[in-house]
Image 1 (spheres, rainbow, N blue to C red):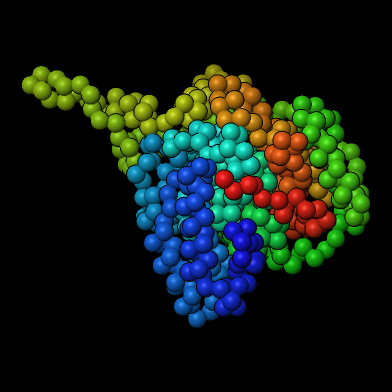
Image 2: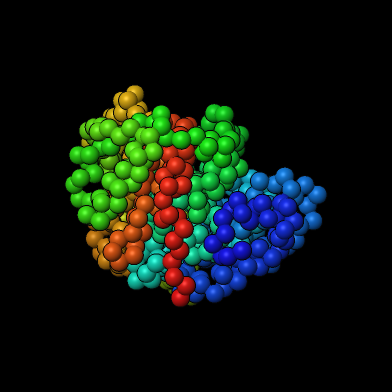
Length: 493
């Protein structure tokens, strides 16, 4: 079995006894050891823990029924893992070890999965390139001079480079789908509330959602069936029934209508991305889908709305990192009379947060604090929430006519490391096609749909109705089955 074996192939081999979970785990760890020094997909690798867990799976009396038996998993480093460092790629949490597991981690391990490490990400999931990590950037395995996307760049690279067949990411404005597109893999953002957020270090609580990143649509469907479902520990967790998503993939697209917001996507999209996108639509229409034009009149406002709502929520959520309860605390600096250290609580807060947070996190905290401040709340935050409602209504009206909305995942392929770090507005615009799904709470998936002439991956995004992951998985699977993009792998270096 190659390093690029699918989740299903590995699971089936371990369930049947054709392969030991320990052997699978050792192969995953060997690939990480070989490839990660050049890519930096991981902040932490838990070799001994993973091998012990794999040995336990091999001894498990019900191994043949475990839906993720022996499957190695990378977990984004903003998702809590008991006894394993969880940093959110921030200096302020560099030594933080949670005393509990996130619900998604509990469900993965109960299903037989083996966590091999914590994946690098943009600091506190703020960024679009995995360059804001306090521990250094992650590199795209297709071209190590390029970014892998963000914020779940480490998770995307772990899958794309054959280190693990499954990774968990979190998606606040495209952070699963955009790196999936730029690394040539599948990334699924479920409906808000479909997957528990308990144990996720919060960025923007009304937008965040955890989801799977995999090599195939089938693998994403299997993983979602494990992750999804109500959780009493998360007040926003939905009680909606969880489908057998893998079984739903047997349907075709003959009865599906796909909507295209042409006026939105024909402006500012790289020509190679646009060409691949429309070629993907031809494949879907050639296999029975009906493609029609739709209008999403407020989608053009999604970026400013997102960066008002998300920064406001982030400024509130990140107030807890103050140097008192956990994480980094900056040492006192000044000595008073008799050599005694002079300090007060406010000064300690200021030093800790100034040194513990990186520039992008500070930028967003300041933006969010500003838009929530007296005199500006109504003009910015409240108005953004009203436009957010209009964006959601646009999708509701569209879904009265169509089953799926299709767009490119990203307007461009991966850009060069460092290219946009000094221009945050250009970085933010990379999320133009992804943020609306978060603002509306809708499920969306990115699947590989081609390459640029310089061999950089391009992604197709399909967005569905609330709690209708089955339909977007179905459409994505039909497309994947009739193309070969998913079989391409980055070169080993």
